[in-house]
Image (cartoon, rainbow, N blue to C red; front, side, top):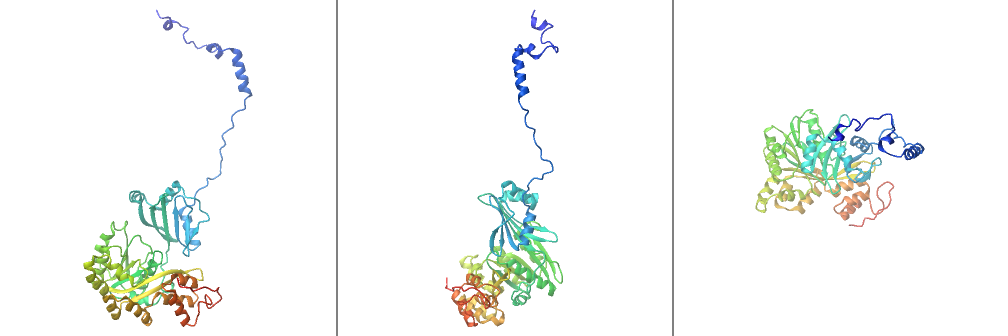
Length: 430
């Protein structure tokens, strides 16, 4: 019989004996260990800070408020970089900002985007949307991926739609937007204020005419409240899934005025021309340096064998072209310098023949009709002290011509920068 299975003393619970007796350890060794343990200091307690808040990164909303207080136009957020503000055209580091980590950027995305937008951004790596702070302002948001990680640019847009007069824009814009039908193009580089100019023109119509205005925007920037006009604003992604679908259906929505934004491709241009030729007023934007380049830019969308016929359609539909630049003013604001082309019968004849030099000269000679070239606008802003001469020179397409205009008006810009006290400036042509 196996003794290990029958002995009643197998693994007994002898609670009255010390542990050393059970393990066979020398009692003297155990006492020395116990003495050492008694002499060793206890481990330091784990300190828990109570009532001390954790340092949190600045939220997007706080950045927007700080940017607005500093009169910034844009906020740039990028992983691996400190956020920056664009103030009067210059990139300025956000004083309260820290280097954006991937985790912080994810927090920003959660704050700004809806779950469906987050999913779309993950899939496409690009996203345009808008955010609204009630009673404060709106922001146009573009999210994208870069070499260092995610990035986001926010354009600040005031809730109040500016007027043509408050922006100090030429009064001829009121006549242009009052036309019954045709194509009006506002052109200029990115960030030159094209959307603001168009918004002010729509506001003028809203206050003076009784029409139905339909806008297709990506995203909505300025929000218009219907007054005399009925205004229907549609945002791509919210009110329509595809820009081209909204564009095709807009003609069935009984509009008088259509804002289609950027003339981005052939479908957009074809629809704009069709709408303009069927009794609608169409407003669109382009990215060109001057008004004369608009026709060629639109023609380049088409095949060479189609361009002659399309030139006729474009020139026949065109009402006006407004090319603009946004310049810092001497009173810490910004103002638009505009080149304006009106499609008068004489201008139409020059454009049909492709005679750009004669068309440009006609713009020079027709200031009484509301036309003007860029140097004329820059010279006026410079002579009235609204902009610095240095800024006028940098924006001028022909510095020599700008100098001649200034001298003909009794002002020599090679001697002083303004009629008031300014530092001297060298007008050497670039």
